[in-house]
Length: 340
Image: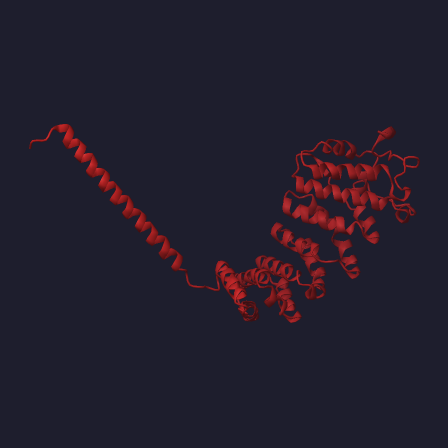
């Protein structure tokens, strides 16, 4: 052969390097072809898929054309469908309303009524999707009054059906709407249910419930009904620092509004009587331990919780009608004994 072993090995290594380079280049080329083919190849549009609906919406909006998707879905809803189909159609309507603002605004109040009729369906999943669709439409100003007409029905659903997803959907809808006065009698009837949801163990529904109660606490004709509502003996656990910050913040806002409401001249002009297990006694009674909970929240890791806890303390110490002036500010004996 005439070649030394070291020289043969050197040539072999060189050949391997050349082959390796060729293989690497080939792999890169194949990868390039695959990527290019993937970019060119797009799956066919399928209006039943939420992703495809989104793609269709973006394409139509980009070219300024009406996709007709919402109208097609609403027409489908009018036809006889099983529960699963109705649920999926309503789910798609919700997505389309958020994505196709111009098309959603072109809908009519009759369309809102059609979606509202689904609240009477026997299947809870259909009710939930109908609530979500109404919530989506509530973002369009001209539909708000029509959607408000369903408030009593929504309150009835969340007070008679113990389903956490339904509670979240219903309460989110109610929190997106102003509450007309004619709904107040129904609100008084469902107040115990709202308080139960607030004290449940499902954070999403708790937050939505306390948010609604905070709004209602600003209505003078509902304040006593809220304060006299019966609560669990461990109600103050809602103020424990171990609770999620989002829930703590909303509960503290609720407490502040209740404190401000009960300190107004109008409310204090009446001698109110509360039952022993009432929210009033839990928060403002002589045996309440709210002060301890508030003081522990002043050093909470989340700043917005700290600030809100301080606001509650101030509202307890300084009734609104006294203007929070040092010379006239009277400590609440139910909370901070001896002016602590």
